[in-house]
Every structure is written in structure tokens, then in C-alpha cells.
Image 1 (cartoon, rainbow, N blue to C red):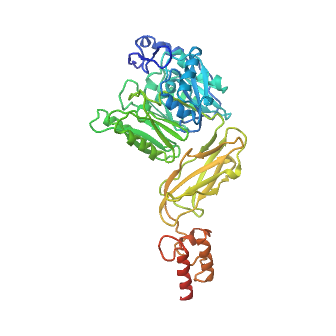
Image 2: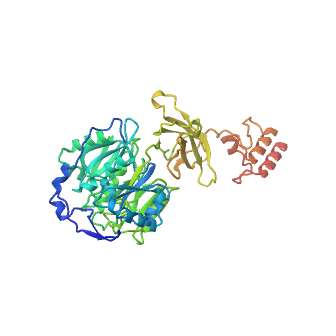
Image 3: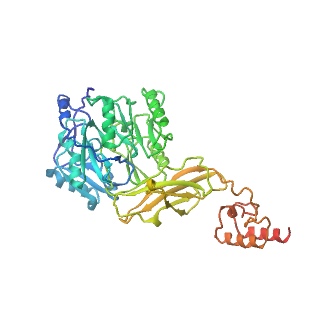
Length: 524
């Protein structure tokens, strides 16, 4: 078994009474009690199949923290604007927690206290992992926390009881900071998941498949070479097609290892058999920028007050166009920041959308740029068919156009909806999102905020159309003048007529084009 590293105790005074906080690593006493970890499990049968492990970037109804806090009340206040803050707290400290939240300007209507003792504030490391099980229930699937901390290890069961959701448990020793999943059967960890379990590696993989539905498990060396070996200290799945890996200068002692990790993940394949889109964030001084929290339409990024903060925030803005990217300072370290101290709680009846974004270089077919998306309402209230749409625009446009999606006729694809974005005449970028609603009142998008972007190749359907011949009759006449008048008045007759309506070639269609066309018709 891998030896654990001793860290000194930290003492913080957030509550009224001094509290001795356990560190994120093991204390000297805990190093002597590591064997206790292997008797803390509460193994159950696996959940009914198929199982889908929920990703961080899906719809969350709340976030799990602990009192005494490891994050600022300013950050908690920001979270409470949109989601429920579930606060683990002992009964003796609930009053202190309430006062701290109230004094910090937190929306107390969005706070629920989960009563019970804890050992530390690393809710990411010991908090519940979530799946959608084969009965289409949102359920907790627990693991054994890789620290001999019974109170922390009980947190997933406490949340299951609090939210009245099914509870399952594997016997695998693990920790949330060393785990990331795409929500579609692909996950990743460093190799401590193997070294901390006294079973063959393939048995670990089998447990991950049976309890979490993981088909592809990337288990890699820790490129940071730190005591903690957590993947969230250097990498993060941002979506089903995007991955973030830290970047350092060539003079950094771990440069080669970090570059190898970046190359490995960029060359691995996503659910749809395509390479991941790789994003890099500059961390020359081991800044914890990858240790961020995705919480619905907001991205919470740990910042240090240094010169690279703005660049890090820009990386997230580029990866998440249309999202709100927020920087928060704190007692961050390179091995411990805000992701370690928070844990999303998914919408228990979420409207799931699974969609493979259109790729750069997409070619149009007869209908345009075709796409599909799977919609599944865990509420069971039923989808609202006329709400299923795709919205699109070009980057310079101010308004979104939309098309209705149609349900697939294939019996095995009853939750799949298909549609298209009209083709463009010239190559360019198209921004879009898909959206649907169910009868529970939920309206959901993919992505949750902002838009997908792809570089679109043009259609060839209009190549034979002549400038001004808006009805494609082969001659210019009064009908073309009437159609052009309608286009000038913001009526559309399709892509090809629109593409040949700029008679004087000034990149806009106005009454001047009507005058030009009238002169051409009258003076052939």
C-alpha cells in the first residue's frame, strides 16, 4: 500500500470557539490508523443498470459545504443566489453557522443545514457521488473515503437521508479530488486509486463499471508529483468534449510530465470517438487554477492576487462562452483550493440533455447542418414537444433564429430529437444551443449557458443562382423586384434568394438594391 504523507495540523478561528482542523493530508496519528480505512466501508449491491455517473457540469440544485467553512461567506453568498447551499454542521454549532451566514449576506432561504459531525471541510473529497440508475432515479453511490475519518465518511449517507434518495455503496477506497467524469461513461484519476486498494487493478475497474457505469477509466501517474496525487490539482473535464490541463514553463521541474499528461488527454477519445478539445491554463508558480467549481451557469475560479489571474479567467471564458466566470480568493494552496471544499448536488429530477456539439468543418446536407440531442425528463412529467428547438445565430447577429426539433421515428431512439441549422452561403462561425422543456416547469439547454460554436462550410445549393433572379426563373423581371422589396422589409424567402439580393454588392440589402434591380429590368 502507498505510504501517506504527514501534514501539520491547521488551526482556524471561523467559529465562535477555536476549532482544530484536520489537514487535507494525514496527521501523524492517522498515519498509524490507516488500516482503519479498510473497515469503514458499507458495501451494498450495485444500483440497477444501466448506470450513468453524473458530471460536475450538469444541472445542480445545490452545493455541499461544511461549517466551520473552508470558503468565504462572499462565495457562499454568490452560490446562494441560484442554488441551495447544503451545510454540514454539528448540532452544537448550527447557531454559529447561521449567524456566520446571516452576517455574510447569504440568502438564508436557500440554506439547508444537514446535521451531523464532520472532521474537515473537504466536502469534495468525502462528499457523495451521484448516478442516474436503471430505474431513472438520482441516487448516491458511496465509496470509502481514503482517510480514517468516520464523520467525513458518513457524509454521503447523511445527504442520502436528507434528500430521501436511494443509497448504494461500493467497497472501493477513493476520494473526490482524485476523480473526474464526463457523465457518459468516461472517467479519470491518478494511480493512487490502484495503490490504495488492496485488490487487482482490473477489479478496481470492474467496481467502477458496476457501480458507476464507467466504460473507460483513465488511470494515470500524477504529473505534479505532489503528496496528494489528486487529479483536480492539474486537470478537469469541462464538458463532454473539452478538457483543461495546467501548463508550466519549460524550466518547471514537472514540465515533461505535465506535457505528457496534456498530450495523453488530448489524444484520448470522447464518447463520440473524437479527440478532446484541449484547453491550457498557465500556472508557472503552481497556481491552483484548475481547482475550480462549475456550478450551472457560473464558474468559480480560485485566484491568488497574482499577475496570472486575469489570464486564467480568460481561459475559462474562452472555454465557456456565455457563462459567468468569477474569481475568488481564499486560503488556497497548489494542492487545495475551492474545488476541494465544495461539492455540487445535482437536480434530482433534472431534464437531461445529451448532445454531441457540431464540429468545425461541418458540411451541410439538403436540410442544412443536421444535429440530434437526447432529452430525458427524470421528473417523469413528460416533454413539451413544441418546446424542443435549436437556436442559432452568427457571432455578429443580435437575435437568435430557431427551428423546431422532431422526435426520432426509430423505436430504440424514442428520446432522440433531430433538426437542423440552415446552411450558410459563405464559410463562417455559427453559434447555437438546443433547448427543451418538460411539464415540471424545467427549461433546459445544451450547453447550460451560452452556446456551442462551430466553423461551418457553405452550401453549394445557390452556386447556380444569378444575382437578382430571386425566383430562379432564369430571367430578371417584375417578380424579382417584388420579392426583393419583401426581403428589404425583413421578409425571408430562403437562403438562396437572400444570398443574391445584394445587387450593388455593398454587404447589405436596402432600397438602393431595389433601384438597381429596377434599372436592370428596365434597361436589360
